[in-house]
Every structure is written in structure tokens, then in C-alpha cells.
Length: 383
Image (cartoon, rainbow, N blue to C red; front, side, top):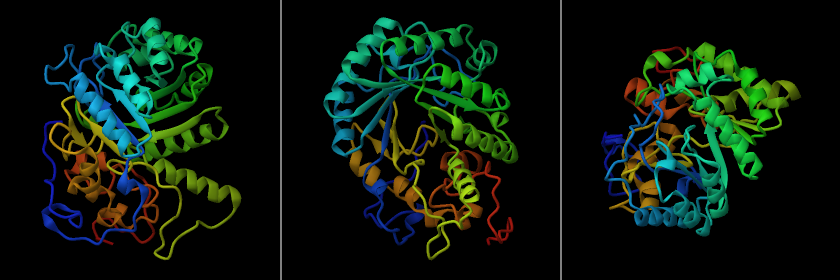
């Protein structure tokens, strides 16, 4: 997360690198405030996960945001009108002020969620204190339906057992539960088994993440576009019957697949606007409805897109989100290139901007893991 991104410009009309002026699209609520803010409390963690975007280490950084700086950050998020706040890491349990921060965020009116690591640090006692402080949900990672698959991916034996214990304790304590799963070669053919596990533990949401090659994650972890398309299709089928909600991270084309399935099932044409864009609810994407704050206070469009917009120690968070060229460019769907730029689903999908940047160096390029080919598109033709 060290890399500097696009520098701030003097006017809200500058929405692309190099000072290129673009006409802004019609205002959207995401232009003013994110739906979700994520704060990386620390990069310290006792796991050594294969895909870790933070390249987590055992010990805490002395330059982490302090407790008071963190409270000011939580107040800034709340003042923007952002409802959802996720405390992540590393492992949030590495911070002794975790409960204090949860309590402050809850008092500020934020819906507080925490994503701990599957280790012995997340005890039943700590869970109870977090609940009493106002934590609304706990989200844990399960990256396979069995210990062998999960522990190999997390590279620490016993992580699967700790994770199931955390889920069991949270259930008994009345804490809402979410499961996060990284989709890759290791669990590509275990989606049905994973769905059963999510149902068995009583989770309300299954969030499936598709790898972005950043941090420790290398391109070898990437699935092919066709394999991912089939997996997202299976996920959509599972979602139809599941007693929990299903969402994806870094795979916004899951929304396109769901819209296509719905259109087929009801036998109606897609709802399109005058420009041929498919209409539908706009999901969050890097920098659009989402912002990420690092353990040192640097502000990014997401934890997987290392384009720095500023720092909460010196900049106003709302101004960074609303006016920095980094965020404005990502919210400008007319700036999308390649087949994403001509795709009829670009308003409801838009492709993973983080993966486009990781693969090509251009955050507006086409998402390399999308198999959809827009009508009339010929690769390399510019059409």
C-alpha cells in the first residue's frame, strides 16, 4: 500500500489522470458518501495467508493510527452519512483498544462489523465484550469446507478449528455471523459443500472474494475467465435456494449473471436506458460506494487498489472521497476502457477496478476475469 496514486486536482471537474476534463455523469448517492468504509486497524496477524493483500506480519506497526485518531476517523465516517463500518486487519484482535473503538463507532451511529482472524486471540470473553460494546456482526474467513483445505490456504494448522469455534461462540452469544470465502483453485469445486457449511453455522451472509493479485497474492492464484464464469453461475444457483444472502467482492459481474438469470426466468427483455445500458441496482465497487483506510491512515478506493488519495491525519475524509481525482475517475463509468467501456452492463457491474489495475496498471482497463463479450466487440479494435 505504499504506492502513490493520482494527485489531487483543483476542481471537481477533473476526473482523470493528466488533467483531462470529463463531463460528470448524473449524480448518484455514491458520489457523496460510501455505503461501506473499511479501516485496517493493524497489519499484525498470527496467520500467513497465501493471498494476504496486507502482507501481514506478527508485530504491530508503531505508526498505526492511535486510539484518538481512530475515534476521529469513526466520527468522520459517521458524519458523511455512511452507515456501515468494518474493522479489519491484519487481525483486529491484535489491538488492545478494539472494544473501545467498537463502542465509539456504535455511539456515533455506525453499524459496526469486525473481521477477526481464525486464531486463539478471539476468545469467547472478547466476543462477549465486543457484542456488549455494540458490534452488530462478526465476519470470519472460511476458505474450504474442511481443515485440510482451509489451513493450507491460511498456512497455519488449527485455523479452521479456531474459526468454527468463533462461529459457535458467536452464535451462542447472539452475534450475527458472516462468512467470507476466497474463491480459487483450492476450493473451486467445493462451492456446494461451502454453502452447506454457511447454512449449518447460521450465517446471514456469504461473501465470496475473487483474488486480486496484490500483496502476497500472485497471478498464479487467478482462475481463468471461463472457470470463474462457471463458478459464479453455480454460486447464483446456490443463492436461489440458500437461507442466507450471497454477495461477491472483486467479482461485480456476479450482478450481470444474476440479471441474466432473472431475465431468462421471467421471459422478459432486459430493462435498458436510451444509451443501451442495462438498468439495475448499482453495487459497490472500488471507490464507488466504498473506501478503505490503512493502519497508517492512508485512504484508498479499496484494500486491493493501491492508489492513494490522501491521509486522514492531514486531509478531510469526505473531501478525499468526493473530490479526489482517484475516486472521481473510478466513479466515472465513461472512463472505462476495453470491452468494459462498451458493455451494456457497465452501470450495474463495471468490472473489478482493482484487478484491472493489478493486471494492466490501468484502473480503467477491462477486467481480465470477465468472460462476457459485448455484442459487436472485437478485441483490439477499440469497438
